Image 1 (tube, rainbow, N blue to C red):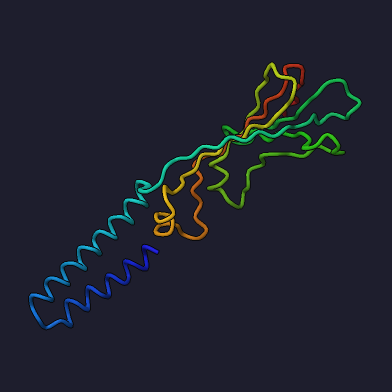
Image 2: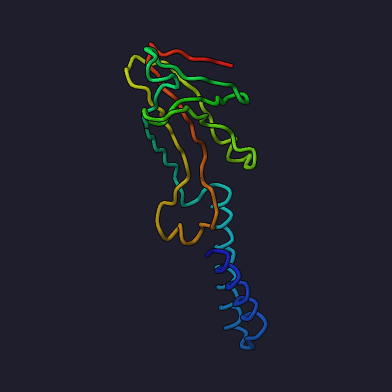
Length: 176
C-alpha cells in the first residue's frame, strides 16, 4: 500500500505546485505534500534496507521420524548424502506404517534462493526416539498496520530454515 501512497502523494504534490495560484497556499500545501512524500519514500527505503517495522521470529517444530530399515530389523537406520557444503539429503520414513523410506531436504533446483536458505544435518543423541527438529527464522511485521503498508504479495521473509534429524545413539547412519 505504501507504493500507492507514494504515487498519490506525488500526484497531489504536483497538483499543488502547478495548479494553485495563491502563493502562500501553494507553498504551504506543496511543501506539506512534498514532505509527506519524502517521509513515505524514507519509510519504504528503511523497510527494504533495514527491515523497519519488522522483527525476527524463530519457531522450532519437532516431528517423529522412523527407521528406513524394514520393521523386522532390530536396529534403526537413516541414509545420508552430502549435497553442497552444508546440506544433507536424509532418507527415513515419515510414519511407522510406511512401506518405503523417502528422501527429505532435497534442494529445490528451480528456486535457488529458497534452497540456499535451508540447511540440513543429523546428530546422534541419548534419546530413544528419532525426531526431526526444524528451526525456522523469518522476518515478521510488528503490527497489522505495518504489514498492510509494506507487505507485497508473494514476498518471502524467510531468513533461514535448519533441519536437524536427531537419532538415538543405537541407530546407524549409511552415508554416500
